[in-house]
Length: 258
Image 1 (tube, rainbow, N blue to C red):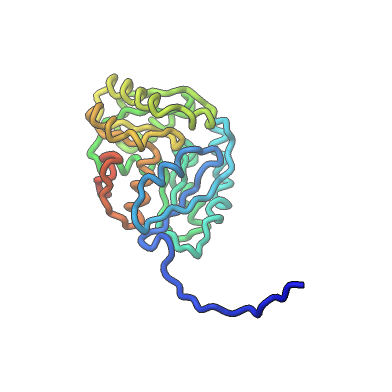
Image 2: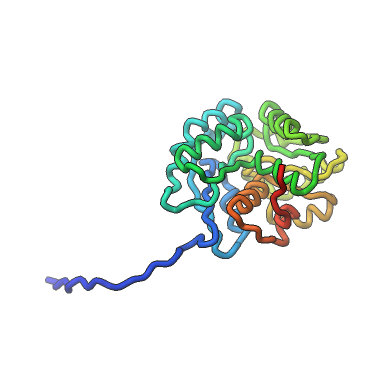
């Protein structure tokens, strides 16, 4: 029989751990295949994203999107308060639009009082202000009834939506597999059809970040996806002012007032 040696207590020291500059919480849709991978592309030293998942239906409708409101506090609670988050984001553009930014923030802050919160539609508006863009062409994957509120929300914030294009796909699994080339082609087509200062690619499932720099050069205006806007806004809210080159013009800008 093996003899178990006496357990020796070892000394240790603690430090600030990961995210010593900023710890950012991100509530990700159960069905999302994209946002976590694109967040890793930022690669900022001592800035870390911590993810929670929220249950959602693979079929994207107004009803399935707004159903998430009741599950938001539980998803936020999976991000431990002890981590002392600098900012928390909810990763769904269409749901945040339909639920409303204020109600999304209230749901998250019910578990994280006082922590700065954002979502892709709020972040997009802040991004376009930082880019001095007033006329925006919009690309979405959604059906018409989900796309229309996105356009109305931007218009309500004083932006002029000059063109609207969609892949008209309601299944989020399929949306996550729409090729980056198709997304880029959609941006080109929509931007060419409009007099615009920027293009908004709405939906955290659409892949854009890896190819956005070349695409911006091609179309001649900033191109901002839901993920890009959300990451940028979260970083700025968390006090991270770093300029990130090669990932789109928005990452070279700071927050503006108003």
